Length: 234
Image (cartoon, rainbow, N blue to C red):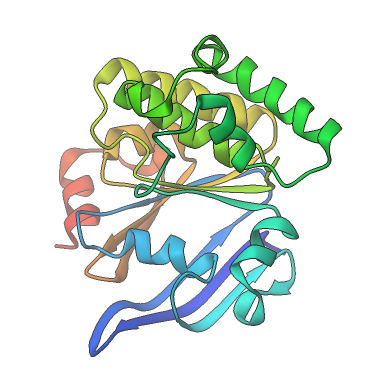
């Protein structure tokens, strides 16, 4: 049985249908990418998993139906953590306090998780007493990831982790994802950046105008024409 199963997911914003019959599987320890252009519905998909928006269909995590669970219970009890593209950090709090906001565990577990985050992102340890809003864009993205990891999640949802970053920071995020995969963390990445997603995800779903228009493995993409067809749906 898959760790995450999404079946026939529909989402409406008023009369506008944002997602249409979306189905997706993610196995324990797997990294899966959802690729699509702006307004394709990627963020809505991640929002649905943690019940930040109303939806119809079926979402099951480790055998648990998420339809009647609160967002807080999904995060705290099921250990699903969400690194949003929006509202990533608290700019007027220190780096350390931002990380502690993401922790729901007992004190000893918080300290252990904080140690892991600092090992993964040494720059955050160096700047733990600095105001988060004064960090560079790439460092803020690392902090957003670090906040999500303070939960010690079974599954991590990443929304546009490379947005606005230069190539050096994109590479650092890739290195971090590689380490998370080695730790056995399951990841679902929603991204516009095809190259980044192919580098990090074992399987890819292509989302266009709220519908899955293709699915493949990263190794299964042979040439540009195939990428164009999957990405744009024609």
